[in-house]
Length: 423
Length: 146
Image: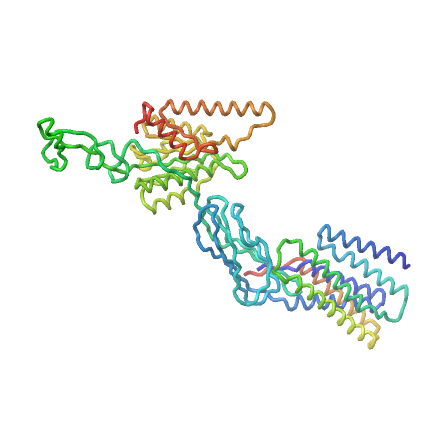
C-alpha cells in the first residue's frame, strides 16, 4: 500500500514549529504551551500508525447477464487490524450503473470480513471489468493514509437483449441434416411434393392408390424432406453512428443475437462474420454451445478504424458455404461493405440485407444547408437501396420506424416476387 | 491595539472562510497562524507574567483546525455510515478536551520549573526542527510494497 501524510500533518507541524520558534524568539512560554497539544498529536499520530492489511474482493451473483438486468454483487472487505475510516471507490466502467449502493463510500472496519451489498446494471451489451476498486485507509487521528488500487479483473458479460421476432427468413437451399425447413428437393418427409411412376425399391406405403386407379399404373407420392439450413450472419463493424444512448452498432449486435438465437432454435447451423477493421468469424454450428460462442464473439464487436480495402476473399470458404443464407446487418454507410455485398451477390450467394437505419441518429446540420444536405443524403440512401434491390438483394429496414420483424417481412415479400431470388 | 487586533482577527476569519470555499487544505494553517501571531503579539505587548488563558487558546486552536479539515474532508464525496458524523463530533470534542489537559499540564510545568538559559533554547529549537522534519518527510510520502 502507498503511505502518505494527509494535509493535517503539514498543517499541525507548521503550526507547532512556528509556535515553538515564536516562543523562543519572543521568550513567551505561553506560545510553547499552545504548540504542545499540536506537537503531541503529531507525534502520537505518526508513531502509532501501523499499515493495515486490507483485501477487497467483488463477488458477482452471476458473470453473465442481459443488458438492463440487475446483478447482485457483494464487496468483501477484510482487514487484519481495525481501520478508523476506509474510503472505497468502485471504478466501474461507464456503461455499468450502480443501482443500489454508492460508487464512493466510507466505513469503519474491524479485523473481520465485512460484506457490502451492491446491485449493478449494464446499460448496454459488452464485456465489462468491474473488479477495479480503490481503497484509502485513514488512521484514527487522520494524519496518515494508505492507498491501494485493486486491479484483479472481474468480468461481467452483458448479453444483448433480444428483439421480438416471430419469423425468420428462410434460405433458398437446404443442407443435408434434419431441421425445420422444407427442402425443395424430393425425399422422405411429410410435405407432399408430386406424383411419379413406381420404381423398384419404392415403399408400398408411398403408393398413391387413387392416382394408381385413375392412371391404371402404379404411382407413388413424392415428398419434401425437412432439412436444416446454413445461415451466416454478416455484421458490419466499419462504422458506428451514435447519438445519445442510440447506436447503430448496438442495434446491429442486438439484431444479430436475435437472429442467431431464432435460427439455432430451428436447428439451423449459424455462423458469424464480423466484417470491419478487424475481421472475425465463427464457423457455422448448431446447439446451445454455438449460441454462447456466437454471442460472446458478438460481444467483442467494436469499431476498429482502418483504411485498408477489404475483400470478400478474406472470409474463409468454410465459413461462407455455397448454399448458406447470408444475412447482412449494416447501416449501409461504408462503401467497402456495400461493395462486398455486391461482390457476394455476384458470386450467387443467397443474400439478404437488414439495414440498421441510421437516419434517427444523424441530425441535420444547422440552417437550410444542413436540412438540404440531409435530404440529399437520404435520397442517396434510397438510390443505394434501389441499386441493391436491382441486383437481387432484398433490403429490409430496421430502426425506430420498423421492428426487426417488419424488416424481415419486407425481405420475405421481396424474395417472394423478385426474379432472381427463390423462396 | 485592541481595534487592530479585532481587525486582524476578522481578516483571519474571512481568510479561513475563503480557504474553505476554495478548498485548498495546504492553506488551512494560514488563518490560524495569523490568529496565533495576534495572540503572541498581545502577550508581548501586555508583558504579563504568565497568561492563564493559554490552555484554552491551545484547545480552541486544535478544535478550530480540526473542524476546518473536517469541512474539507466532506468534499471528497465519500459518504460515511449513519452515525459517522456523531462519532466524529465526539472525537473533535475529545480532542479539544485532551488539548486543554495537555496544555494545562505544560502550563503547570512551566509555572513550576521556570527554567531559562541555553538548554531550554536548544530544546525548543530541536522540537521545532523535528516538527519541520515531519512536514518534509510526509510531504514526500513513502511507498511500501504491498
